Length: 202
Image (tube, rainbow, N blue to C red; front, top):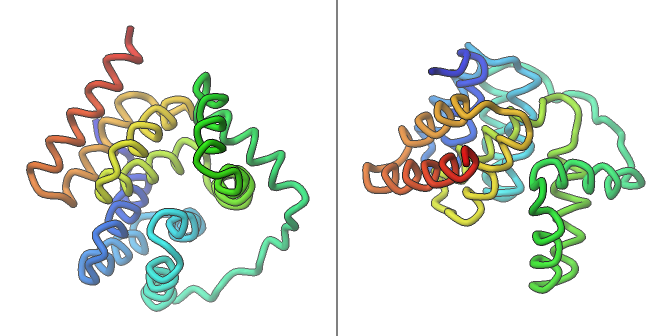
C-alpha cells in the first residue's frame, strides 16, 4: 500500500528534513509544493523544529516561501492558557496506556522537560489545528526514522497507530523514510516496526 500522493509528499518532506542535506530538502519542498496541501505542508515544517531545531526548521520554511511563492500566514494568535490542557489530551492520545509511565519517566529526567513536552510539544505544536493527528504522527515517525532515534521512533510508531493510522499506512510511511537512509539503517527501522506491529497484533 502507498499513501495518497498528498500525504506521501508530507511524510517525505518530514523525513527529508532529518537528512540535513540541502539538495534533499529542496527536492522534498518542491515535491510538496506540487503535491501537498500547502497549509498541511506548513504545519509539517513548523512541527519539525521540535526535532531538528529552530535553525533547520527556519531554513526549510524559507525554502518553502521561495518555492511556493506563498506569503507567511497570519498567526493563530493563541495564548499559552490552553496549551497545557490540550497538550495533556493530545499526548495521552498518542501514548495511550503508556501515557502515565511516559510522564513519570520524563519527570524523573527533569520536571521542566515534562512540562515543556506537554505544554510546548503537544499543546503548542502537535495539538495545533491545520493537520490531523494521524498524519502528524506519520510525519514524525518518518523524521525520527531518518534521524536515527530508535527509542523515540518506537514511541511514535505506536503513536501513529494510537492516533488512528492504519498499520498499512505506517508500513507506507516507514518505507518512505527508508528511502532517505542507507540499507543498514533502513533494515533497523523495518525491524523495529516489525516488532511493534507484531506486539500490537497480539
